[in-house]
Image (tube, rainbow, N blue to C red; front, side, top):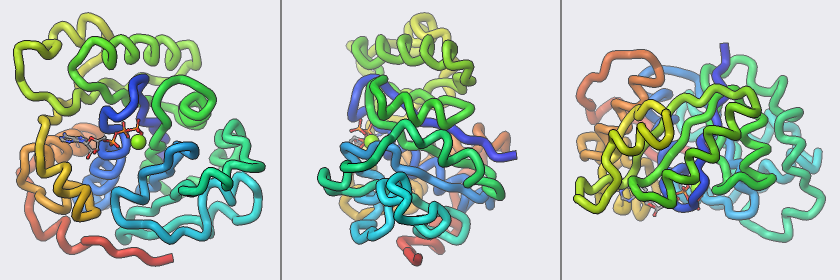
Length: 255
Ligand SMILES: Nc1ncnc2c1ncn2[C@@H]1O[C@H](COP(=O)(O)OP(=O)(O)OP(=O)(O)O)[C@@H](O)[C@H]1O
Ligand SMILES: [Mg+2]
């Protein structure tokens, strides 16, 4: 059965897109799962940019405008990982109704094991549309009060919408005294912490290299954390990363 998971946060810039790409890469390359990744952040689209996918004549925007069939709008990043980017041009917002996302997706993902929806920050129309198009919600937060407070709102919203809150990824953790502790975050959100991803310069380097950190440096701290997260999501036992599995699939795009 296809699992459709929206990756959500209230506060912006906490690492949703990074999480989506790395998780998708782990599920596809390590666990041989068929994965679709959709950029649902149409006003501030970054998914393709993080992996050097700049030229995209077909986008979620053109699909929502019914100019392109959804099956023709995917780009193949790896044999088992397809990406549906959103347009980088603001003018491409014209004629696009993001609320149609759920209806569009209903029949489109048969044959996929996972569909990861990279949501816009906050709980406005865009993020809400991604949540409504999903069955499960993965929350991403940094270990600080503003970000965690927004997760509390997000969890309430997910429950109102009858979606399954999967749990929480704490990102950019630096293990400093001023950060919220894991127990405090669990207490505030009542969500299980699925993984803590450390602050890791390799993630920023991987952004420069236009590839997920699990491809760029599988053995980095963040790379290992994403591998653990992917293993947990796939219900598999964690195994330390082997370079070759990921590097085989470096930066391949085809239509
Ligand atoms: N663990 C990490 N260590 C260091 N830098 C990180 C880490 N995770 C993410 N970043 C960096 O943080 C920035 C924001 O990440 P990202 O774009 O994934 O956040 P986002 O939640 O998707 O943002 P938005 O709300 O704008 O969509 C990026 O520059 C990314 O490379
Ligand atoms: Mg993002």
